[in-house]
Image (cartoon, rainbow, N blue to C red; front, side):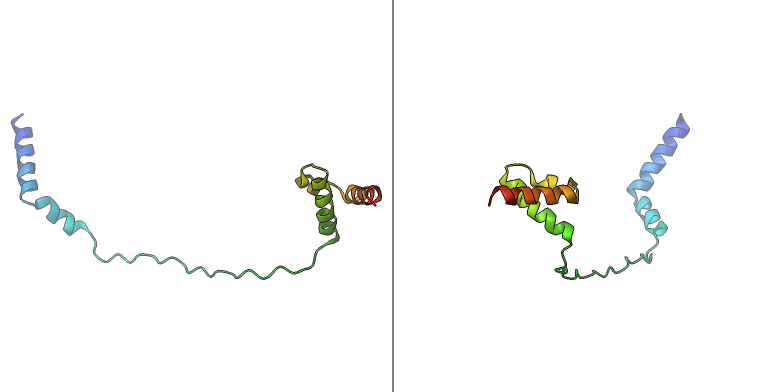
Length: 96
């Protein structure tokens, strides 16, 4: 028991004397070269070409028609080309 108390008391004296900070300063390495992050080059977005495929044209026309019918226009992207063409022709024939 006396040994434990002696160890605790000596540690407390060393702590108050600043021995712990001196030991920590001696243990630290001053100049650690930190790895630099690689430079990131941002790619500028090229302007989108005005080339619209036939499918996109059909989807745009059908999106307008479906929204006028009061339905969700996002369903157009799941339709096949033949269904898109039929939807467009039926709508134009009925509303002439």
